[in-house]
Length: 193
Image (cartoon, rainbow, N blue to C red):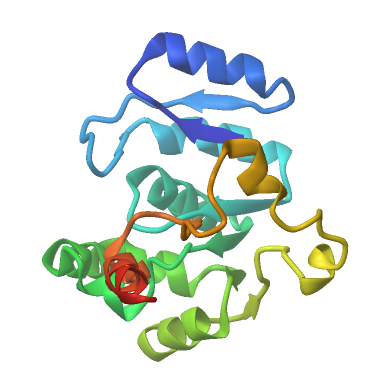
């Protein structure tokens, strides 16, 4: 089940046809920033009878909060994946709104999760310092050094794109967020000789 809305009905229809085996619950949130829909819990309560466990992506999102609270009300177990939002840095961003949200229901949603999946030990450590977690585990993003044992011939990328060997390249994979420190890395990269 995917609870979502893009705000663009043609895009929503396109997304639904792209995921044939997914059951979409289209939500039209009253509050756009928080994605809160007062009718979602009623719809979810009926749908959740078909499932044994729920995998919830994210925190501080009205749709996710509704899903967690509905699962709690039905006794369904849920796995929470916070994607770094429980780090000290993220908790300081919009801290006032997050404190209110935590006091009202998010802390309960986090602490009542059957388990929480973190992508690093640092992320898990910061969350554990701020929350009483029942159970958690660290599972990386699925990239291992073994994946890079057989690499293509060096220089192939540059050759295909007409990039000189003397030109420096930077590859950044990730969200453009201050927590990534990209601006620090770019300054250091520009000074590098």
